[in-house]
Image (tube, rainbow, N blue to C red; front, top):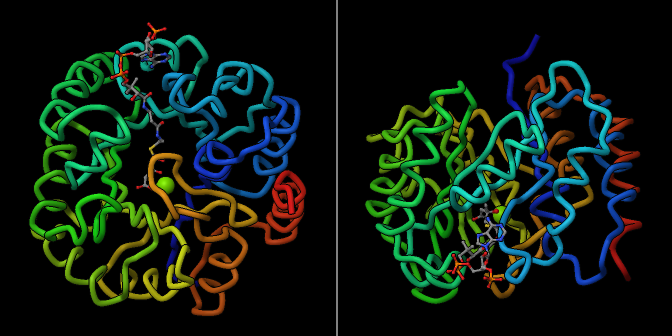
Length: 284
Ligand code: HMG
Ligand code: MG
């Protein structure tokens, strides 16, 4: 059996948060229910952020209430502040995620806070989650490039990743938010981050804006990363990152990893069914 690489499905959150069309809760629930049969351990399905900032995620509590939860699958939700944390708990999310940026420009545009203020906001969330053993994941955005500030220094990514890990995030996901990374810049960034956070606690979250996400995954694999975030059907983006079209597609990454001899534990036929549903949600 090949070495295990885990794919963390983020399509129902990162994908659908960026769709222009208002997607009915029933369609989101149907997509998640299909994904639940595909063999993922973790699926990000919700985001408890301000509906003024991201109206697409307004039905998150209804999505968590409507899905059929599969044994062994953790259903995750983004929580930018204590209000989001409480809403995620009420909706019975199995894990949550806080999200920071390695660049000040994106931090301001995305969550209306400096990086330092965002870490302060996350501290009580991590404390509260620790008391009830709720796993918390941490995201760092703009790990190679920022749409506002230009190239991101690898040392800054390492610093923010270290802060999230030290606060208690069990894993830190490194986001190439606008898909501008190259195998070279991704590798430089990872070499710096690996010095501060164990590579087994890192994940790659690469948007495919420039068609380089698979090459970037290869660069990250070579440096020991074994968890990747993907979105079924290549859905995705970020409303506060102009040009951030499309997370790398789950089906493409799963097929690529299997070709390389890694084990993903996924049923590729069910992944393809979910990809077809996801593509049908997107207007041409
Ligand atoms: P703010 O305006 O600075 O905060 O927003 P505020 O506390 O003044 O609140 C403003 C309004 O939002 C108030 O309502 C609050 O009640 C409400 P009003 O009085 O105006 O009616 N509010 C909330 N409502 C629901 N749930 C909440 C909540 N908090 C406040 N949790 C805030 C600050 C963080 C809330 C805002 O900036 C926000 O919601 N930002 C989220 C942006 C977002 O979701 N971006 C996409 C996710 S990140 C991403 O995609 C990147 C990632 O994929 C990795 C990568 O690719 O790099 C993870
Ligand atoms: Mg993203």
